[in-house]
Length: 343
Image (cartoon, rainbow, N blue to C red; front, side):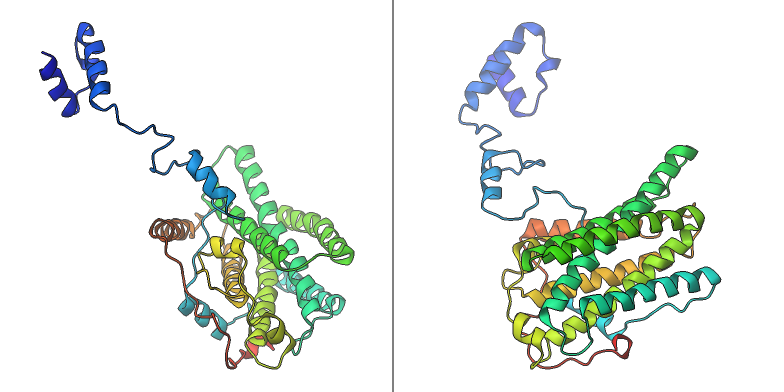
């Protein structure tokens, strides 16, 4: 009987299906037959929550890692980024609300250029540093506010959101990751921190008011905001890749920080300009998403849901294979022409 039970266990029998009198025998026999089994906490099988001691030890060795969960971002390829750099576009205002938010956004853009000392040619390095910090802290506000309004609307009306919330939260988190990446590269002084707080104080109620009055205009405003970000990043990338400019001298051979290599799945020898290109591509994506949302009704289904699923799958595969994306910027040599849209 005992040998029969052991053979049944080996074939995958369920102890609960046995008579009660034989259950202790089955359990003891199975345990004695597998007394060399490794405890699950010591096995090398990954835990979904990274809870095993060896996984925790691995986290300690890394400055930034998957322990701090983020939504899966799109992993950009060199071909995608080159296409975006060569095809910058700007939306032409059509309606009165489009013209209103366009004027407001580009008025802020010109004022921001004046305050930060930004210029499209031979830009001082320090002017770009604090510009990027303020820009990313500013750009991280609308997505979260819009997601909050969508969430409350869904609760208030007892109805579905149709997938918008996730896209808006992904945008907000992506902008925050841009900011955290910049903070690994630059220092924020008193003036920069003051501008960050001031921008948040002004931006939050403004976007909230637009979402209450006309949600489409709020998304159009964010689309124009992202257009200015695309222009800024494209210009900065061009200067970094152009010998003789201050940005080329300061950044052309700077390594990418670990937080960026992990988030965008970059190789260990990736450069800072690789990161700038990923951030540029993210801003192009946000531009397109918000201009699309501006044309949709509030109860239309989110057309970007399947894209998020594909992004998550691609990121998971790269992580599982230990692979990275390669943007080809280990060395920044030569001059790349800048699109006329960035002038």
